[in-house]
Length: 103
Image 1 (cartoon, one colour):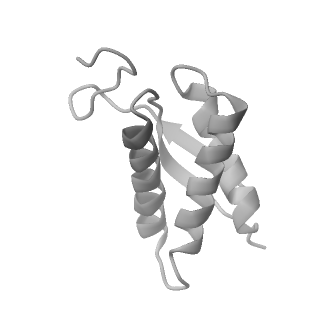
Image 2: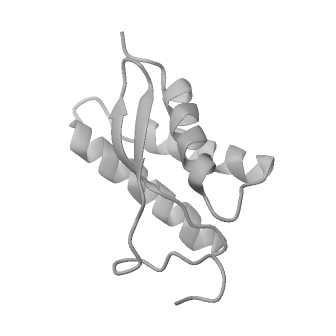
């Protein structure tokens, strides 16, 4: 059985918040969850797993870009049946990872 969107978004949010720098406030955690719910809902029925991860990671990119004060990992895998989320740390080679002061 596939978990509902809000539970999947909460699982991803928890995994993201555990590694985000600086630590997220409850308000920011709620914002991340809302962004992820919208990304899940925007996908339609025919998306592949890779498309879904790309869309969710793009939503995290947009959240960080808008806020310009938080950095965190990206989703490597998501098991919809169990809600298990694996995150991967981004390297500084491709993305600026420091929340303050740039490279």
